[in-house]
Image (cartoon, rainbow, N blue to C red; front, top):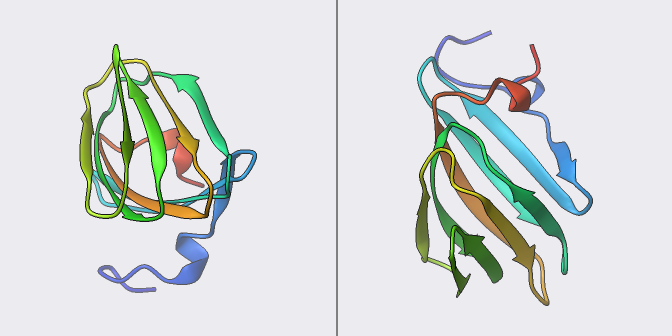
Length: 111
């Protein structure tokens, strides 16, 4: 086991909502999450105390953050402060986003 390189057993995919899978790796202070959306999949409305920033890598998704909403595609970035309600709806094709959280979300890490 390496102190610097995560192997596949440390970051196995996990389903967080139907059609929404994440693969995560975490350090001591922050966490990276690859989010994969099936067409039409929904990340239900929620909030958490963690600060979240991210970027769409592939496909398109409709983001609802606070009182704003926008359709994002590859290269588009977003910020979601802790405590702000948000949800995401995958659109017509598969989509991928990269999220970074601070601090680490213990509910996403298998211990």
